[in-house]
Image (tube, rainbow, N blue to C red; front, side):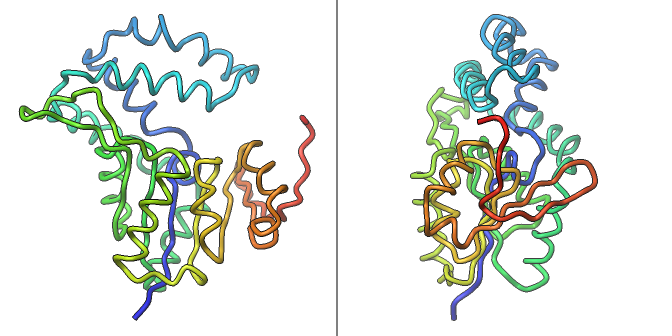
Length: 243
């Protein structure tokens, strides 16, 4: 027996921000991370993005490097407690369209998977909140004392997401032709291309450009834009005005 599946990215696709960013802020608030790491290494890039002069992906990549380094030697128990607080406070701050689609898939009996670049200890808690079949995030390695080593196994790029998707497909005998995927950046390209029903939610410019130049994906994808209390369904030929 084969199953229909729905593969969801989290940050920017389901959650309206980044779980890692919220966790980083909480770590500073609880004095696990020195605030100077933010002010010395990330604040300028964040300010450029917030004022729409910079790029969000550049800000996120810079923060990720500082975040991983800051967690070296920190015990997983401390991180898990704060991660729980992040999900408790932010877990409902999601796009209405994505939340509705998760429930739609579950009502149909589809397998639902989260595949995200956010840390595994955050993704696992988000997965439990939404009752998904399985989920995978970037793996943060711990030593024998459960302290973080500073090493990670990334899950935010298209190649690694495809490997994980392949694992789920084999394990659950997934019918890809009738399955769905949801993403917002080029890190989700493999998920979008492998299924018969890809959906881009609030895609960034780089992903939208890729879609326009990939005939196969262009011909089957839906583009969803959610702003304020309106959800727009567009074709892949949506035009941008800031080229």
